[in-house]
Length: 407
Image 1 (cartoon, rainbow, N blue to C red):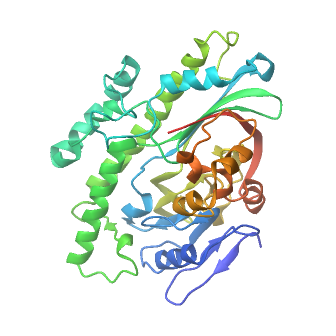
Image 2: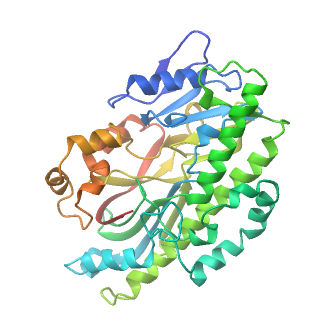
Image 3: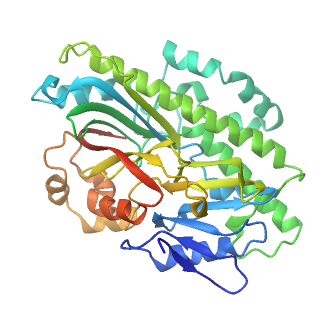
């Protein structure tokens, strides 16, 4: 059996692809709490990168009948990955990669200093044309959301964040595959506007649950039932935020390609040999076992048969372009990365800058105390994670980063 079956009284089963990888008790209890909800369809699936998360378990796949749990989607709605294969080869790159990293950092705002305020270096003070053009396609949907929920318009306008990276575990990388072909890869989501939408509707769901006296194992698992007051509004808002996240990644990738092109350090190239863009924090309606359900993937990627996805490792490890094998028992899903093995605070306390320098040797990236929470040892072994899900995906390309930009 490729997965471990976890059962608990009063709960549907949990099928966990965790053989050979760390699985902490807090994450298991969080999954059990989710499995106790009467709205869950069949079972809960846990991917090998599973770990405790704020609100709901990261690395979980939760199919629900006529209901959605906003906290299971989370606040980084539509967060995901984008990667493009280029015609460049390793031999075309300069020996010193620092100027490549610098060009990317100048082209894409990253980090955060002022919570979306005027001193926020992670936002556009004056959005460029490519950001404004990307947002124009989304403006009508945003206006509809604000018509009903005007408070969501506070802080930075979404046009100021489209085409920007953010912070935390978001990154932009230059990678080499097994044939020494150059790839550009990035990880980001719906930025400030997705956070506001997620936070607002999570609180509305909690309020509604209190009003209807639902007996929940965890208040964070409050949900909207189809037909309820805020259900349709949430579906529309979360769908819009997912579209925004995808547009954000597309805009960033165009900026990265242009920035590297204009360095003059590489020959002319194209970046359309292969392209993948996938969410890993999202909800959508799907059919499983003959029923229409809402599938929430919190830190998980769709892996239908033949579907391409991206599973990144940490800053010092390999990443993978994968093809789904269509495993129905995982609800056609796979992991979204390596998964944390320790909290950010634990990593900051345990590791030194020297540890981080050793772990990222040969990679052009930040090597300072502010990125210790993202050091490779804070994550599970990506190769063990891939082995645990070999019945969920097959590897198409193996990527090794040589440049990494962090927020």
